[in-house]
Image (tube, rainbow, N blue to C red):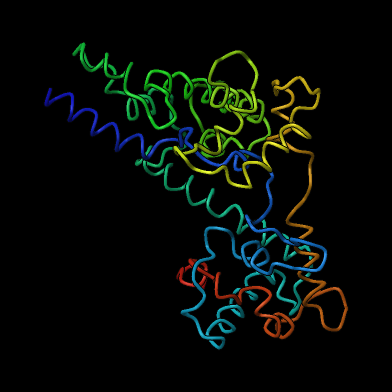
Length: 330
């Protein structure tokens, strides 16, 4: 029993460095090409939530607490960021340069996460990682001859209700889709698709399949409204249903369930999580240029950006976060 406990403790550490497994989260987080911020950009026709701009400009994981920075320090660091955005060094930031920066901030988490996991799974920094190497590191405990370990692998579940054997099966399938040249090994680019399938077009059909497996609890091949809501929210006894849940139910009836049969089939789930293409980064870049461009020449000088520092970073609720404290940024 001691060996079993030790084995599973090691497994918990290893799985933590492996690909993210399905977990309880708001269903809207499943949507690919989502907005640049969890904030509403224009809550109504008159209001404008600048926190949306802060998160879009800095990246959602970088926007933390701005209160600790004085306006002077904010402007100094914003000026350093400006120099990084001005790729051609002409003293102006164009809409395209701003779009590239916003795209980078949004993808920085993915870039950092892939680097971290690549090092964890490939300490020798080889050109590829083979399936057998990955399987041995993450699921090698399942090869233990002890029957109790095998039984535990069949029964032990992560937060989503998947056993480790089921997780292995899902990982194997995802690996095969990510492995574009079918050589049983992943390059770093292929590994990116494996870790973050939302970043690779050829992985998107698999995302739909995995989403169906996560949400379709009764395995009837379709998603009911209760399963849809259950993916986002679980009520407590006596708890009044939040307004946002009522809104999501309305969304399901009016927009998700397109044929009105009370369920989402695979194609309807696909329409939900992979919406029509829209370049949020380009739209936000144009918005920021429009708001900050004092002389209306279609581009931003450093002074124009610093004069509008509150638009880009100034808020009691958000800040540069890690972007302002990372030594490599400055």
